[in-house]
Amino acid sequence: MLYVDNNGITDARLNLALEEHVLRNRIENDDLLLFYINAPAIIIGRNQNTIEEINADVVNERGIRVVRRISGGGAVYHDLGNLNFSFMTRDVSARFNRYDLFNRPVVEVLRDLGVPAEIGGRNDILADGRKISGNAQFATAGRMFSHGTLLLDSNLDDVTSALRPKPGKVESKGVKSIRSRVANICEFLREPITVIELRDRILERIFGTCDRARVPSLILEEADWGAAHELLEHRYGNWSWNFGEDPPCNVQRVQRFPAGEIDARLDVHGGRITGARFFGDYMGRAEVSDFEALLRGQRYDRESLSAVLGRADVREYFGDIAATDVLALLSP
Image (cartoon, rainbow, N blue to C red; front, side):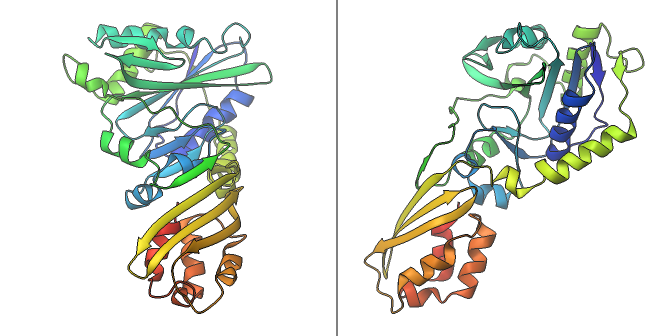
């Protein structure tokens, strides 16, 4: 096995791009191990509906990045208190869906540290029945990776708040996350350690040393970083990938205002509003169908909705209801 150094990058988009590039282009005879630590980010599973997994208000207020990955599974939260690992191999047939094979050294290290870690569920690592690690896998062209999180000392308030969808009815064909009780590994430690120290413990378990000069490594060339940045630009940093890949969904939001109730129904496909209908006992002068037409074709995000509301006289359609209230009602 060879270690892959990501140069301390904390941009989730670039780390996921690097992971994909290395998997597709640099794995040869040796298995590879990549670690990365991300600034606050929600990582969405390949087949999930982003708007159904996140609370966009919390995400925007706290500056949390949202990025879709190429592996399946549920949404997970990353921050600087979370260590991410990725094992890459060509041995797919005997190892796909065998999370225990990849996670064994991780679990052993955690147990050495006094954490009652065990493989649990279909792809988690648990401690006292609480989730401390979520894992997923991806295979392509005779190679695969198995990657996971290690919640060492993450902001659990962000975990629960940002991964709690905004109240309202969303019916989707996407794969929904299974909400589990989560815990930080630091709760179980005899003595505190840093994320880097946890990484080094795992390196030492696998390679017999954490001395970077002695750990066998895959050297990344300038061309590798260039390819990773290109992937960031065209995939991981692209709205169409992170939101536009959402499967079709139907959004219903209902709220009563002093001027009347609005029952909003939106059809969303590919991250854009394909249909809009408004019901309720509000009293406006203009035909609400004109407002519905303004919404169709727009991206389903707060910025685009705000732009539409800025061009429309909302009170003409809904009576004495402020545009900011309608924006709050409709936003994902």
